[in-house]
Amino acid sequence: MPAANRSPYDIEMFSSNRETSTVAERTYHCAGFSSVTAFETSEGLVLVDTGLKSESDAIATQLRERTNAPVHTAIYTHGHLDHAFGLDAYLRDDQEPPRVIAHAAMPERFDRYQRTAGHNEAINSRQFGGTASPSEADAEESRFGWPDHPPTTLYRDELSINVGDITFELHHGRGETDDHTWVYCPERDVLCTGDFFVNVAPNAGNPQKVQRYPWEWADVLRTMAGVGAATMCPGHGPPVVDDAAAIRERLLSGATYLETIVDRTLEVLNDGSPPHVDIIHEVELPEPDSDEPWLAEVYDDGEFIVRNVLRYYGGWWSGRPSELQPAARDDRAAEFVTLIGGIEPLLDRIEERLASDDYRLACHLADVALEAAPADADVQTVVEKVYGQRAAATSNLMAQNIYAAAAEYAAEGRPFR
Image 1 (cartoon, rainbow, N blue to C red):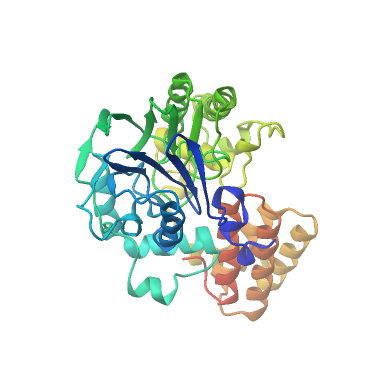
Image 2 (cartoon, rainbow, N blue to C red):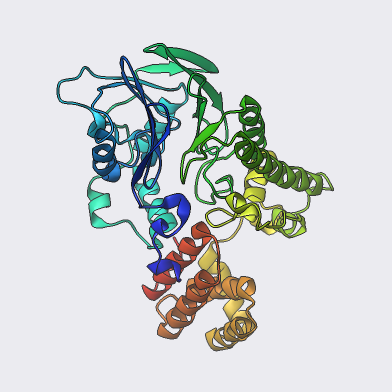
């Protein structure tokens, strides 16, 4: 399905089938776009995450069919919109404000969201909708900033709390974010992973977002596997209930996947530090295994994880001398078009590359054409076709929707900016 017509709800990790299930004694896993885990105690509910604000009313309604206990404590595993912004829906009118616990790095995230709200609206429109720009509603009132219920208790490395004689062990680790928390409840033997585990390949390489930490992420997965929990409630997708061996297999294979990409990337980087674009093609990525569907690259991509490793260890420069202080894109494009004798030969070559299913080269040439002649109707048509086909041929949602956004840009006669 072309990304422009595909919703993120089409894949399992973003399931819109809101379902609440009992995973342990008085413990409920509430599934939606993201997951909420509710622990009922004698003092009230402990929520691990609160879901996407737009879904929280529906999820809370299902949860209230199981329990009417007030919310005593909410734990935000990290500060993304689908985990830390939905608390209001779970609160009873007659209850006291709950304690909200998060890692000490989270306030800095919310400050950054406020400073870069327009940027975040744009990149999320591309990532999830395959559109070239945010909706009018998003532009008028950004979702990015501080949640209505910010953290009231911050911790740094570890924190153990008791609510109604039930223990909750909080542990910090860097992975998808720098403010991430995973939670273990020993009395009920339930592990809540946040987005350290999401039932598909780890989101460790997102091309539009801030730094990810796949090497530390792998360490966290191994530490969680060592807990030996009987039940696991992930940040997205279905839980694993009463199956410690299956949980261990998922966590350890995820660690191996990340470690393999990191180690192979650093090996190539250490071999004379070639340009980053060459490293991308020299790193041998792990082969997909049909017996490990939880590592399917249907959201992120191993190639993007390589990029994140390079960004951290190798800086922002591509390693190509001309790109250290480059000319403007449209100037370079105009020069290239002049050298080959005009737009028509370039469009012909693009069509040849498309006919050979050489999408990588076709996209490079398409960018040049659109940057050189954005108002040319033939250019718009060809470039829209290139990125429409690239999106349809791409298996992971993140890249698919970015390509769909590029097709939309081309149709509007503007380069990707």
